Length: 235
Image 1 (spheres, rainbow, N blue to C red):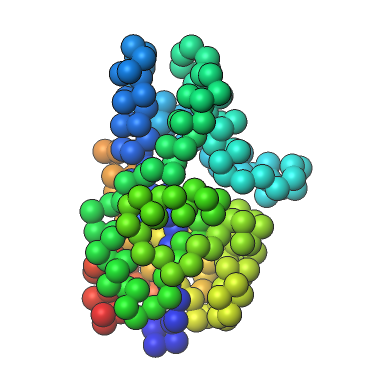
Image 2: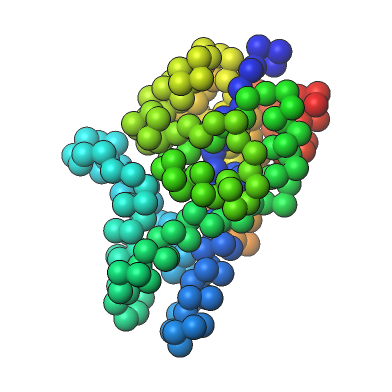
């Protein structure tokens, strides 16, 4: 671990509680407009369109677009699936930007601040720069630099997402550690030579929602929180 100089963090699910945040955003939005639906189910449905939309870009059948664009297109599909009245432009923009306003898990800010004392810390996310920057500013996430999709011009788990992010800060992959609540992210990062840390977030998809709760690989560190990760890294 002494060779590690930078910690890369998955964001959605690992750093922030997207499901609760998006559900609450839609409840507040609907309450002011007299709309009714199962908002948690709608949040899940919206999120369920995330990987298929990115796969269209990964497979090169579609040119590069940022995640805000994909979130907007997926919102249109999810909204229609729940037979809700069509959104006007302003309301659609407001809901798409809800992904910029996600709340962190309780340990995230304090844990990241502690880890920042010993390492470069950066999000390596599929989120676009504006999304991640706005989220960080609102939530107090103390990133040193914002990396990820636009820097790499690739969506995880493509190799470029990890390799180009490491190159952007002038570090070899073996000097970087990917921190994530998702085993598939860590498998992909390890394949490119990065160190790995698994932080389970059992409530990411709600109670019994199918989050990764156990490591499925030989990860370098398994810790229950960012604070526990700091302990493992002797900070």
